[in-house]
Length: 452
Image (cartoon, rainbow, N blue to C red; front, side):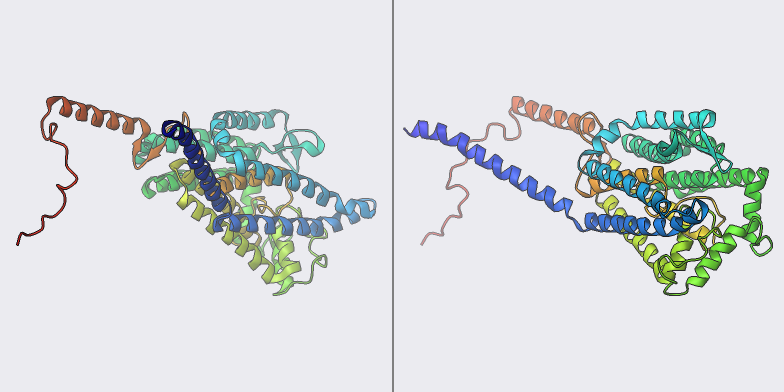
């Protein structure tokens, strides 16, 4: 009976232990999913999306009614598209946050090649709007390939630098990433889109910095990029006009500096508390593209200085949580990826806000989460999903992917374990150094009591 009881009891005990282990894993995953950083990221994202929907409607409704047939039905055109794309993007963000890190890493080469192909295709069969050819596809299904290229380059950089961490030691090891990034930037400049090119360059630089590239090497890259950007500005008349308009906006207030001057008027008329949502004047044909690139000026006019401070605060909250997630990530790939994606969103927001406030030349970069732009919104929410996945404790360093921990790879650890096992076997076969010790009795370790 005892033997049978033991044989029956062991599986039961093992099953109980497995059940407890699975329960503890679920608790840990649930705790990770509701960590402080996760909640901060989600809160900042949802608040910015809600603000964006309101401000897109406010910025676009007036021009839609006044510029079309006067029907109120046209006033919600951009709002409806923003809501549809936003809901779809939130679904994608949720799915990626739960399951997306490993599949996305495996698909990185396909995403990179696909984005480069689309950048080539947009120069041949792209849709031209406002003098630039940046979109592919018909009507409301148009997509901007440069947005996908931003994401693909960061994914590629994180994957390469995580697999081969020694590449960060000198510039020669970074040649593959720098060449691919340079090719993508040249294709984006040819559209032309210098603003997105700047975002790509700064985002890849932040990814390199997070991977451990020396600041001196980054300085050399920055000098080359700066010289090239200055050359591209000098040879293109409209870029030169934007630069001179930035340096002396009052001299060309009716020409190249018109947009910057109107943005300053909007921010100044808003004061501290703003004129109220929907009551702004500058959006009525004074601010070109008020619902996209210049939406920060509409926020400043209608919500005042407090509105701008709230936007900056939300992006600051997002950046703090994102960098904390990168710091606490479980593997090198996740650290580099989250740092790069967080930097990409913050860099884009900084360029937009600086341009609207007159602290940088106008480049046509939208404000993440807030400006109208289907491609930008989808890519941004996809990126947030990847960051949330890492915040939940996700990792992509499993399976066939090589894991780097403490400077040693999985193969190196296996070799060291094998060598230790072989040394132990050889020691036992020689019988030396205590190999034939007698077994220790239970009373040997006890302290002898003094006699008498």
